[in-house]
Image (cartoon, rainbow, N blue to C red; front, side):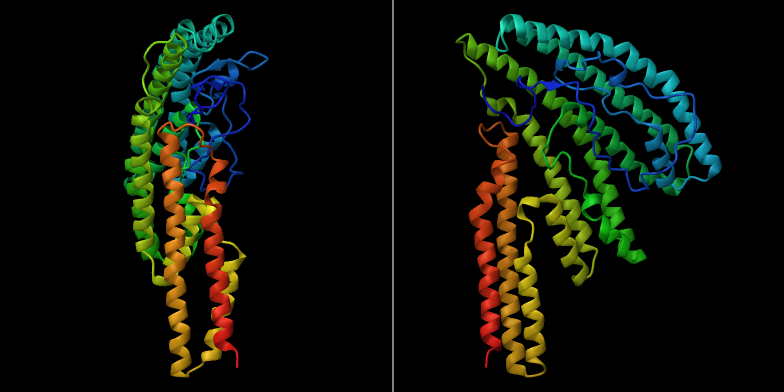
Length: 413
């Protein structure tokens, strides 16, 4: 069975529905996590309300694992700068949404979905995971999951649209963050550890945002809000494409087990891969645009923060700090002597250029690895990436060591 990276669980394109302990990343969590929730008799229904005591059911997705909880709503109220009257109206709209749309939808749709998942699990037990019956049962459960996810996303989007009419006009641009959060609920239901699908550029630049002046901050925020408006629909489309690819993959294994012609895995996962590439390009462009809003010194810090967030495998080590310390000492040593100043500056330019190129090459390797995994290439795992990068990381460390040695020699009598 091919080791496709898009899925978890023991069956290709299947996930376990029982593990509800890990909440999805919340792009909107920019308010304090200890925001008190407003009291209300209405509570959002979720998958946890419908699972059996064992909590173990096999299926293609986990709809309603993550739902719009009241604590999160309070964070949105803070994020949208609602006054008391607006906040009360938003809470009332949320309560109506729970009573009239969300909770009835959960209770009406999940029993059928879980029954289809149970049929799939029984087909696997009785006939094998590559049997035509398992493929047909998986197809039915997957299509129902897709219907639920589309309907639940549309429902939350309708709530966001209603909230738009309840808040100040100059705060409505902030709702793009909520639309991304709603789309990420679909992503969480599908299940993925893809860095680009789960990426949040706001988190990458969070520390920088707090230290910027009004003009630079406004520029960066505008870039990120444009990104959010474009990203949310791509995430929705990616989620739907993943479900379809999972169905095709299950049919592929059934055909292979029967000795019949089957589709190539790369063809099956090509649409999710293309959408992942579009999301990746959107993230990178947004962060490049945001960094371009900053002055030279701020841009250097921001680029390092972005790189560390996106590519933790390429994280800067203590060797870079050692080079910077050596540069400071060399600058002090040079003083105002033009010959010395010129020599130190030449070393600085040489190192900055070479280090930036080495880091960029590492990032490109990471993106190529991610693209290959998203395309259905067998045998590539997230754990294997650091091993593949080790020679390039060693070369970058050697560059730092060599530069520090050159500076020490330059300063020696």
